[in-house]
Length: 97
Image (cartoon, rainbow, N blue to C red; front, side):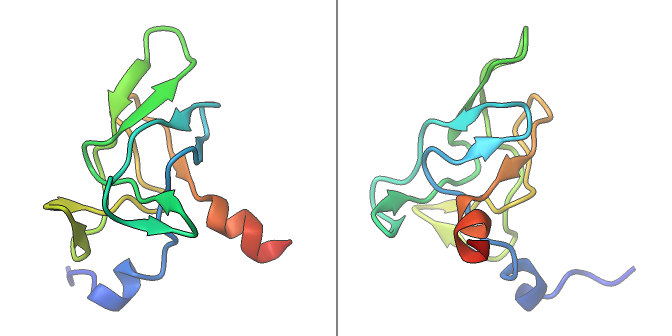
């Protein structure tokens, strides 16, 4: 099985503070040092707030294997938080409007 190439990893939009999840949650922490259009970039270990019973506040657990900010890998559209929710990038909605 071939490993993903860095170019494939970079094709997915990054997650930023206040992006949503497919469980109806929201990203609540992100980098203090890096932003896109003045919105801070989320990384593995940053937190989401999930409204589903028993999920609550939990960390992002998947992300880029190649792009790192402040010592942590960047979270991208389609990555996951520990509760199983999928992160949804607001950059996709903006690009299609």
